[in-house]
Image (tube, rainbow, N blue to C red; front, top):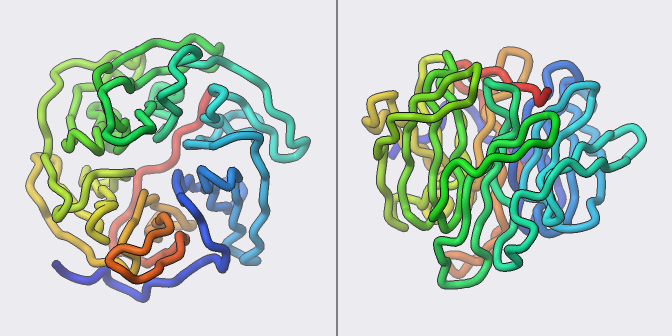
Amino acid sequence: MVDLKGTIERRIDIDLAIGESPVWDADRHLLWFVDILAPCIYALNLETNRLATYPMPCPVGSIGLASGGRLVVALRTGVHLFDPVSRALEFLVHPEPDMDMNRLNDGKVGPDGCFWVGSMHESLPRAPTAALYRVTPRGECTRVIGGLKVSNGLAWSPDGGTMYHADSRGAYVQAYDFDPRSGHLSGGRRFATFDESDGLPDGAATDVDGNYWVAGVTAGRITKFAPDGRIVDTFALPTPAPTMPCFGGRDLKTLFITSLRTDRPGIYHMGTLISVKTDVTGVPTYVFG
């Protein structure tokens, strides 16, 4: 294991219960992220270091950029559009209205302009009641993958032709052939498997070279995989429970990483947002709609 190049910076002072879903907004030069349990959406202005807060009415699993300056938001009550100016929420669809044992979790906007969002079984031990869904801007919802415990790890290759998806408690990452026009998946294959010492796979990101960067939430590391599934590098982090990496900054060469609050291994660590400069460029953020 090697250290990330550059100095790792802590970007916020607040203690996040479950920091998640960092999303780079190039138009506004903002880094959006959430605290699932606060529940709250945050926007960090990288030029002023000002942190704006947008409290949510219930747990917020993930977010994505949407047209018209809005966000698409996965709440316990379903998928909504959120306007940061008016702070109004507009309901789109609930993928699992009758499954109280689940909540919505990791979600990202894909190359097809749709919001891909998964659910997770909340109780321990995790049961395979969760699924991955594709939500269109018109609110049409399709169940794409079932039999999951904790849906996670969404990311796409630079050309949009491959989609990566993890089950954190599987614990594995799958790769699929992806049609950026239709959103159709095919050719599913096992990309990587994990145990707790490797770091169970949580959120992920890709770079322009096609490498897949995944947070090892149980091992305090980021693992970088080549497109063929080989481990290129593992990067040690100052937090034992990273949840998701995201490339941002004007050149898309800053890696932002959220984490969750933990006392593992017997020492209290706050959930936070950290960043570090890299020598690689990330894939730009897609927009819902």
